[in-house]
Image (cartoon, rainbow, N blue to C red; front, side):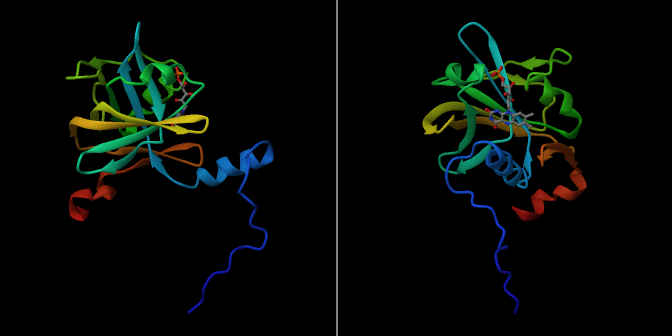
Length: 178
Ligand SMILES: Cc1cc2nc3c(=O)[nH]c(=O)nc-3n(C[C@H](O)[C@H](O)[C@H](O)COP(=O)(O)O)c2cc1C
């Protein structure tokens, strides 16, 4: 059996990531394909939404999910201690993803949730009560306890190598795996 050797020219990725190394770090991270989500919540004076791909499931019992939010964002400080919804986007919702990433588009349609607002027409959503917050360097990791959730059928929006792409529902086949 052939065992692949690490590439001799594999770049050193341990240590700080500024300049070209940051570019390379981002490029390496970009090889990990993700979905696209929007975290929505009511802040002190206004309703917030922020596009993220750092969403991950954490625990089944209790049901916990995580998002990683940059300290530089407007959403960051206001999210602390507040209920939030993670809205998972469908293939046709790229414009919505960009709207909440600083490129304004048509005004989104909101739905009042039990504890936090959410967006109309998303592929799935997880409404969360705040569970814990952890230091994540220049980000903060926000864990939420899921109190309500649902999904619809449809193609998924995905993100890889800084590019949006689509995963057709026909290729998801999730019910067979679980
Ligand atoms: C596909 C995609 C994924 C993103 N993922 C994250 C993320 O996981 N965490 C984060 O803090 N920002 C992420 N961003 C950037 C924020 O959406 C962007 O900085 C946003 O404008 C911040 O909004 P705010 O400053 O109004 O809160 C992502 C942007 C895009 C387009």
